[in-house]
Length: 162
Ligand code: MG
Image (cartoon, rainbow, N blue to C red; front, side, top):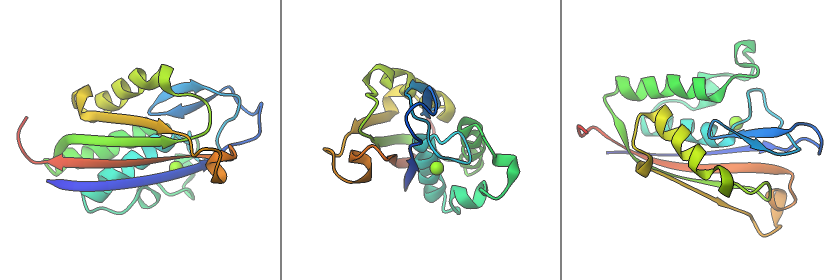
């Protein structure tokens, strides 16, 4: 068994700056985009760092540097695919993962199932292995003031056959 955890934060842009954000590879309707070099999918970024941590590898900033124009506007799901390839190379697979998105708005409930489906598909695991929760921070701090969004993910990998 290998455990990993990942955290990511992105700032929201001003209201009217976009019509959606990306979370878990799913378009979530919102009038504010996020400030990011890539598509700013905090959930996938935290997941990739959790996977890399479990593999004992350097973080996503090392794998996909901000300074490299190749990753400008990058689709986080394709970056995740290359991290999943590293997991496959190590002969490890997902036992389970548990993710929490911290944000004041928008509400994620209508998108929860689509996000779980998207993540499970990307990881090549059953949907019941993917835990996904969201919470506000009760108006406290930068998340509570609606200035940004954050995600935290823990993963457990196993070398057991399916
Ligand atoms: Mg990020």
